[in-house]
Amino acid sequence: MTTDPAQLRRALAAAVPVADAAWRDALEAVPRELFLDDTVFRPSGTQWEPVHRHTVGDDEWLRLVYRDTTWVTQIDGIAAADAPGPLTGRPTSSSTLPSLIVRMLDLARIREGDKVLEIGTGTGYSTAILCHRLGDKNVYSIEYDQDLAAAAARHIHAAGHSPTLVTGDGLAGHKDAADYDAIVATCAVRHIPPAWIHQVRDGGTITTTISGWMLASGLIRLTVHDDGTASGRFAGDQIGFMLARPHERPPRPAYYQRPGHTRPARLDPGLLDDWTGQFLAQLAAPSAELMTTGDGVILVDVATGSQAWTEPARNGWQVHQYGPLRLWDAVEDALTTWQDAGAPPQSDFGMTVEADGTQRGWLGEPDGPAWHLPA
Image (cartoon, rainbow, N blue to C red; front, side, top):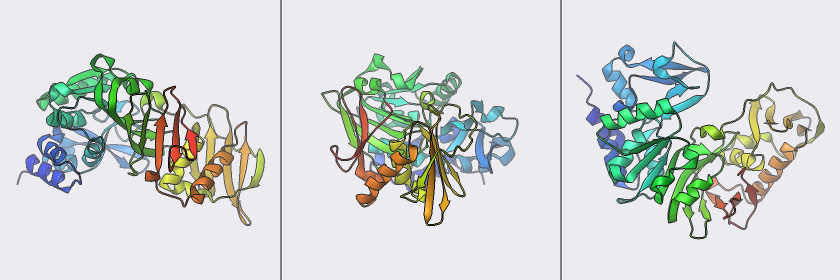
Protein backbone atom coordinates (compact mmCIF):
# COMPACT_ATOMS: atom_id res chain seq x y z
CA MET A 1 0.00 0.00 0.00
CA THR A 2 1.35 3.43 -0.93
CA THR A 3 2.37 5.60 2.02
CA ASP A 4 0.09 8.65 2.45
CA PRO A 5 2.15 11.81 3.20
CA ALA A 6 -0.91 13.58 4.67
CA GLN A 7 -1.30 10.75 7.18
CA LEU A 8 2.40 10.95 8.03
CA ARG A 9 2.07 14.71 8.58
CA ARG A 10 -0.85 14.20 10.94
CA ALA A 11 1.06 11.57 12.90
CA LEU A 12 4.11 13.83 13.13
CA ALA A 13 2.04 16.80 14.31
CA ALA A 14 0.20 14.71 16.88
CA ALA A 15 3.49 13.52 18.39
CA VAL A 16 5.06 16.98 18.74
CA PRO A 17 4.57 18.73 22.10
CA VAL A 18 3.62 22.37 21.54
CA ALA A 19 1.59 24.83 23.60
CA ASP A 20 0.07 26.72 20.67
CA ALA A 21 -2.02 24.30 18.59
CA ALA A 22 -1.74 26.57 15.54
CA TRP A 23 1.82 25.35 15.03
CA ARG A 24 0.58 21.77 15.05
CA ASP A 25 -1.87 22.76 12.31
CA ALA A 26 1.04 24.15 10.30
CA LEU A 27 2.95 20.88 10.62
CA GLU A 28 -0.09 19.02 9.31
CA ALA A 29 -0.39 21.37 6.34
CA VAL A 30 3.17 21.87 5.07
CA PRO A 31 4.53 18.98 2.93
CA ARG A 32 8.10 18.48 4.16
CA GLU A 33 8.95 16.26 1.19
CA LEU A 34 8.94 19.35 -1.06
CA PHE A 35 11.87 20.80 0.89
CA LEU A 36 14.29 17.86 0.85
CA ASP A 37 14.44 17.21 -2.91
CA ASP A 38 15.57 13.61 -3.42
CA THR A 39 18.77 13.25 -1.35
CA VAL A 40 19.87 13.87 2.24
CA PHE A 41 22.90 12.97 4.35
CA ARG A 42 22.76 10.66 7.35
CA PRO A 43 25.62 9.93 9.75
CA SER A 44 27.65 6.80 9.09
CA GLY A 45 30.47 6.42 11.59
CA THR A 46 32.70 9.46 11.16
CA GLN A 47 31.28 10.24 7.72
CA TRP A 48 28.08 11.51 6.14
CA GLU A 49 26.39 9.11 3.76
CA PRO A 50 24.06 10.37 1.02
CA VAL A 51 20.64 8.69 1.00
CA HIS A 52 18.78 8.81 -2.33
CA ARG A 53 15.05 8.56 -2.83
CA HIS A 54 15.44 6.27 -5.85
CA THR A 55 17.58 3.90 -3.78
CA VAL A 56 15.31 3.50 -0.75
CA GLY A 57 12.02 3.77 -2.67
CA ASP A 58 9.19 6.28 -2.40
CA ASP A 59 7.48 4.81 0.65
CA GLU A 60 10.63 4.51 2.74
CA TRP A 61 11.70 7.97 1.60
CA LEU A 62 8.47 9.52 2.89
CA ARG A 63 8.87 7.71 6.18
CA LEU A 64 12.38 9.17 6.45
CA VAL A 65 11.11 12.64 5.58
CA TYR A 66 8.49 12.60 8.32
CA ARG A 67 10.71 11.40 11.12
CA ASP A 68 11.13 14.06 13.77
CA THR A 69 14.80 14.38 13.00
CA THR A 70 17.22 16.82 11.41
CA TRP A 71 18.26 15.86 7.90
CA VAL A 72 21.59 17.30 6.82
CA THR A 73 21.45 18.61 3.25
CA GLN A 74 24.93 20.10 2.79
CA ILE A 75 28.43 19.20 4.03
CA ASP A 76 31.13 21.87 3.74
CA GLY A 77 29.13 23.49 0.93
CA ILE A 78 28.53 20.24 -1.01
CA ALA A 79 24.85 19.45 -1.52
CA ALA A 80 23.70 15.92 -0.80
CA ALA A 81 22.64 15.43 -4.43
CA ASP A 82 26.18 16.33 -5.60
CA ALA A 83 28.06 14.07 -3.20
CA PRO A 84 30.00 11.32 -5.01
CA GLY A 85 29.75 9.13 -1.91
CA PRO A 86 30.19 9.39 1.88
CA LEU A 87 31.88 12.64 2.95
CA THR A 88 33.90 13.72 5.96
CA GLY A 89 33.29 17.26 7.10
CA ARG A 90 30.99 19.66 8.91
CA PRO A 91 27.28 20.14 8.14
CA THR A 92 26.63 23.56 6.62
CA SER A 93 22.89 23.29 6.04
CA SER A 94 20.04 21.07 7.17
CA SER A 95 16.31 20.68 7.50
CA THR A 96 15.80 21.12 11.24
CA LEU A 97 13.68 18.57 13.08
CA PRO A 98 10.06 19.78 13.01
CA SER A 99 9.58 19.65 16.78
CA LEU A 100 12.45 22.10 17.26
CA ILE A 101 11.08 24.49 14.65
CA VAL A 102 7.71 24.74 16.35
CA ARG A 103 9.36 24.81 19.80
CA MET A 104 11.26 27.96 18.81
CA LEU A 105 8.20 29.58 17.26
CA ASP A 106 6.18 28.69 20.34
CA LEU A 107 8.89 30.11 22.63
CA ALA A 108 8.94 33.31 20.56
CA ARG A 109 5.21 33.71 21.30
CA ILE A 110 4.49 34.62 17.71
CA ARG A 111 0.81 35.30 17.04
CA GLU A 112 -1.45 36.12 14.10
CA GLY A 113 -0.65 39.53 12.61
CA ASP A 114 3.00 39.52 13.71
CA LYS A 115 5.67 40.50 11.22
CA VAL A 116 8.61 38.10 11.54
CA LEU A 117 12.15 38.07 10.18
CA GLU A 118 13.65 34.60 9.96
CA ILE A 119 17.45 34.37 9.94
CA GLY A 120 18.53 31.35 7.90
CA THR A 121 16.05 30.19 5.27
CA GLY A 122 17.83 26.86 4.83
CA THR A 123 15.60 24.48 2.88
CA GLY A 124 12.61 26.83 3.35
CA TYR A 125 10.57 24.37 5.46
CA SER A 126 10.42 26.58 8.56
CA THR A 127 9.65 29.58 6.35
CA ALA A 128 6.63 27.78 4.94
CA ILE A 129 5.45 26.91 8.44
CA LEU A 130 5.61 30.61 9.33
CA CYS A 131 3.73 31.49 6.15
CA HIS A 132 0.94 29.04 6.94
CA ARG A 133 0.40 30.67 10.33
CA LEU A 134 1.03 34.35 9.57
CA GLY A 135 0.37 34.78 5.87
CA ASP A 136 3.03 35.40 3.24
CA LYS A 137 3.06 39.19 3.59
CA ASN A 138 4.15 38.99 7.24
CA VAL A 139 7.12 36.66 6.67
CA TYR A 140 10.63 37.78 5.72
CA SER A 141 13.50 35.31 5.49
CA ILE A 142 17.17 35.82 4.73
CA GLU A 143 19.73 33.22 3.63
CA TYR A 144 23.50 33.69 3.42
CA ASP A 145 24.24 30.94 0.84
CA GLN A 146 23.13 31.86 -2.70
CA ASP A 147 22.62 28.27 -3.84
CA LEU A 148 20.60 27.43 -0.74
CA ALA A 149 18.54 30.60 -1.16
CA ALA A 150 17.67 29.70 -4.78
CA ALA A 151 16.68 26.14 -3.83
CA ALA A 152 14.62 27.36 -0.87
CA ALA A 153 12.73 29.78 -3.10
CA ARG A 154 11.80 26.89 -5.42
CA HIS A 155 10.64 24.79 -2.48
CA ILE A 156 8.59 27.57 -0.89
CA HIS A 157 6.90 28.52 -4.15
CA ALA A 158 6.13 24.85 -4.87
CA ALA A 159 4.38 24.76 -1.49
CA GLY A 160 2.21 27.68 -2.61
CA HIS A 161 3.80 30.51 -0.60
CA SER A 162 5.40 33.81 -1.61
CA PRO A 163 7.06 35.47 1.39
CA THR A 164 9.80 38.08 1.01
CA LEU A 165 13.06 36.17 0.49
CA VAL A 166 16.42 37.90 0.76
CA THR A 167 19.91 36.62 -0.04
CA GLY A 168 22.54 38.19 2.18
CA ASP A 169 24.13 38.31 5.60
CA GLY A 170 21.47 37.47 8.16
CA LEU A 171 23.56 39.09 10.89
CA ALA A 172 22.77 42.43 9.22
CA GLY A 173 19.06 41.65 9.26
CA HIS A 174 16.79 43.25 6.66
CA LYS A 175 16.26 46.91 7.54
CA ASP A 176 14.00 47.63 4.55
CA ALA A 177 11.02 46.01 6.30
CA ALA A 178 11.85 46.93 9.92
CA ASP A 179 10.45 47.16 12.54
CA TYR A 180 9.66 43.49 13.18
CA ASP A 181 7.57 42.03 15.96
CA ALA A 182 9.99 39.13 16.21
CA ILE A 183 13.26 37.82 14.84
CA VAL A 184 13.78 34.06 14.90
CA ALA A 185 17.17 32.60 13.99
CA THR A 186 17.58 29.02 12.76
CA CYS A 187 21.34 29.40 13.07
CA ALA A 188 23.34 29.97 16.26
CA VAL A 189 25.33 33.12 17.06
CA ARG A 190 28.18 33.93 19.42
CA HIS A 191 26.52 37.22 20.32
CA ILE A 192 23.42 39.18 19.31
CA PRO A 193 24.14 41.31 16.21
CA PRO A 194 23.35 45.00 16.83
CA ALA A 195 21.20 45.13 13.69
CA TRP A 196 18.74 42.68 15.23
CA ILE A 197 18.22 44.93 18.24
CA HIS A 198 17.70 47.97 16.02
CA GLN A 199 15.23 46.22 13.71
CA VAL A 200 12.85 44.87 16.37
CA ARG A 201 10.11 47.11 17.76
CA ASP A 202 10.03 48.05 21.43
CA GLY A 203 8.62 45.06 23.27
CA GLY A 204 9.40 42.74 20.38
CA THR A 205 11.48 39.60 20.73
CA ILE A 206 14.60 37.88 19.42
CA THR A 207 14.65 34.08 19.70
CA THR A 208 17.93 32.38 18.94
CA THR A 209 20.58 30.02 20.25
CA ILE A 210 23.76 31.40 21.76
CA SER A 211 26.66 29.13 20.91
CA GLY A 212 30.40 29.36 20.39
CA TRP A 213 33.59 27.55 19.50
CA MET A 214 33.10 24.87 22.15
CA LEU A 215 29.80 24.13 20.35
CA ALA A 216 27.86 24.49 23.59
CA SER A 217 24.44 26.04 23.12
CA GLY A 218 21.61 27.84 24.91
CA LEU A 219 18.14 28.67 23.56
CA ILE A 220 16.90 32.11 24.59
CA ARG A 221 14.11 34.62 23.93
CA LEU A 222 15.18 38.22 24.47
CA THR A 223 12.75 41.10 24.82
CA VAL A 224 13.87 44.40 23.26
CA HIS A 225 13.25 47.44 25.46
CA ASP A 226 12.66 51.08 24.52
CA ASP A 227 16.08 52.13 25.86
CA GLY A 228 17.90 50.01 23.28
CA THR A 229 18.66 47.14 25.63
CA ALA A 230 17.43 43.56 25.51
CA SER A 231 17.21 40.84 28.12
CA GLY A 232 15.84 37.37 28.74
CA ARG A 233 16.37 33.97 30.33
CA PHE A 234 17.59 30.79 28.70
CA ALA A 235 14.89 28.21 28.12
CA GLY A 236 16.94 25.23 29.27
CA ASP A 237 16.26 23.11 26.17
CA GLN A 238 19.21 20.93 25.21
CA ILE A 239 19.26 21.85 21.55
CA GLY A 240 21.74 23.38 19.15
CA PHE A 241 22.01 24.89 15.68
CA MET A 242 24.92 25.35 13.30
CA LEU A 243 26.78 28.60 13.88
CA ALA A 244 26.09 31.44 11.48
CA ARG A 245 28.89 31.30 8.94
CA PRO A 246 30.49 34.63 9.91
CA HIS A 247 30.63 33.33 13.50
CA GLU A 248 32.19 29.97 12.60
CA ARG A 249 35.42 28.78 14.17
CA PRO A 250 38.61 29.81 12.35
CA PRO A 251 40.85 27.06 11.01
CA ARG A 252 42.65 25.38 13.87
CA PRO A 253 46.42 25.01 13.48
CA ALA A 254 48.04 21.70 14.26
CA TYR A 255 47.85 21.03 17.98
CA TYR A 256 50.96 20.22 20.00
CA GLN A 257 50.85 19.85 23.76
CA ARG A 258 52.98 22.45 25.52
CA PRO A 259 53.59 21.79 29.23
CA GLY A 260 53.70 25.44 30.35
CA HIS A 261 52.66 25.92 33.97
CA THR A 262 51.40 22.82 35.79
CA ARG A 263 49.24 22.77 38.91
CA PRO A 264 46.64 20.53 40.57
CA ALA A 265 43.16 21.01 39.13
CA ARG A 266 40.53 21.99 41.69
CA LEU A 267 37.68 20.46 39.68
CA ASP A 268 37.09 17.32 37.66
CA PRO A 269 37.18 18.12 33.91
CA GLY A 270 34.24 15.72 33.58
CA LEU A 271 32.06 18.69 34.56
CA LEU A 272 32.39 19.81 30.95
CA ASP A 273 30.38 16.74 29.92
CA ASP A 274 27.36 18.39 31.56
CA TRP A 275 25.22 20.50 29.17
CA THR A 276 25.22 23.53 31.48
CA GLY A 277 28.82 22.99 32.58
CA GLN A 278 30.07 23.09 29.00
CA PHE A 279 27.95 26.17 28.23
CA LEU A 280 29.40 27.96 31.25
CA ALA A 281 32.94 26.96 30.24
CA GLN A 282 32.26 28.54 26.86
CA LEU A 283 31.08 31.76 28.52
CA ALA A 284 34.25 31.83 30.61
CA ALA A 285 36.65 31.14 27.70
CA PRO A 286 34.72 32.34 24.61
CA SER A 287 37.60 32.15 22.13
CA ALA A 288 38.65 28.63 23.06
CA GLU A 289 37.83 25.35 21.36
CA LEU A 290 37.24 22.17 23.33
CA MET A 291 38.59 18.71 22.61
CA THR A 292 38.16 15.64 24.76
CA THR A 293 40.55 12.76 25.26
CA GLY A 294 40.44 9.59 27.26
CA ASP A 295 42.53 11.39 29.86
CA GLY A 296 40.61 14.66 30.21
CA VAL A 297 40.03 17.79 28.14
CA ILE A 298 42.04 20.14 25.94
CA LEU A 299 41.28 23.86 25.50
CA VAL A 300 42.95 25.72 22.64
CA ASP A 301 42.68 29.46 21.94
CA VAL A 302 43.27 30.03 18.24
CA ALA A 303 43.90 33.77 18.52
CA THR A 304 46.64 33.66 21.15
CA GLY A 305 47.91 30.08 20.96
CA SER A 306 47.02 29.62 24.62
CA GLN A 307 46.16 26.09 25.66
CA ALA A 308 45.21 24.07 28.70
CA TRP A 309 45.08 20.31 29.04
CA THR A 310 44.24 18.03 31.93
CA GLU A 311 45.48 14.61 32.89
CA PRO A 312 44.92 12.25 35.81
CA ALA A 313 47.19 12.71 38.82
CA ARG A 314 47.72 10.61 41.91
CA ASN A 315 45.06 12.41 43.96
CA GLY A 316 42.77 13.69 41.21
CA TRP A 317 43.70 15.80 38.20
CA GLN A 318 46.38 18.20 37.15
CA VAL A 319 46.27 20.89 34.47
CA HIS A 320 48.97 22.26 32.18
CA GLN A 321 48.47 25.84 30.93
CA TYR A 322 50.49 27.61 28.28
CA GLY A 323 50.27 31.07 26.71
CA PRO A 324 49.00 34.50 27.75
CA LEU A 325 45.50 33.25 28.68
CA ARG A 326 45.02 30.93 31.63
CA LEU A 327 42.07 29.13 30.05
CA TRP A 328 41.55 26.54 32.76
CA ASP A 329 41.71 29.19 35.49
CA ALA A 330 38.82 31.05 33.84
CA VAL A 331 36.80 27.87 33.30
CA GLU A 332 37.47 26.56 36.79
CA ASP A 333 36.47 29.86 38.43
CA ALA A 334 33.18 29.90 36.51
CA LEU A 335 32.41 26.26 37.30
CA THR A 336 33.20 26.85 40.97
CA THR A 337 30.75 29.77 41.06
CA TRP A 338 28.11 27.54 39.45
CA GLN A 339 28.73 24.69 41.89
CA ASP A 340 28.65 27.05 44.88
CA ALA A 341 25.18 28.11 43.69
CA GLY A 342 24.04 24.47 43.72
CA ALA A 343 24.82 23.67 40.05
CA PRO A 344 21.44 24.98 38.79
CA PRO A 345 20.19 24.13 35.29
CA GLN A 346 20.68 26.38 32.29
CA SER A 347 17.21 27.87 32.80
CA ASP A 348 18.65 29.71 35.83
CA PHE A 349 20.91 31.68 33.48
CA GLY A 350 19.98 34.78 31.52
CA MET A 351 21.47 37.36 29.21
CA THR A 352 21.50 41.14 28.88
CA VAL A 353 22.43 43.29 25.89
CA GLU A 354 23.29 46.83 26.94
CA ALA A 355 22.65 49.94 24.84
CA ASP A 356 26.39 50.30 24.19
CA GLY A 357 26.53 46.77 22.72
CA THR A 358 28.04 45.09 25.77
CA GLN A 359 26.57 41.61 26.21
CA ARG A 360 26.81 39.31 29.20
CA GLY A 361 25.42 36.04 30.37
CA TRP A 362 24.52 35.92 34.06
CA LEU A 363 23.54 33.44 36.74
CA GLY A 364 20.42 33.87 38.84
CA GLU A 365 19.67 37.56 38.33
CA PRO A 366 21.07 40.30 36.06
CA ASP A 367 23.20 41.64 38.92
CA GLY A 368 24.53 38.15 39.75
CA PRO A 369 27.78 36.52 38.57
CA ALA A 370 28.29 37.40 34.90
CA TRP A 371 30.51 36.61 31.92
CA HIS A 372 30.95 38.82 28.85
CA LEU A 373 30.10 37.50 25.41
CA PRO A 374 32.56 38.16 22.54
CA ALA A 375 30.50 41.05 21.13
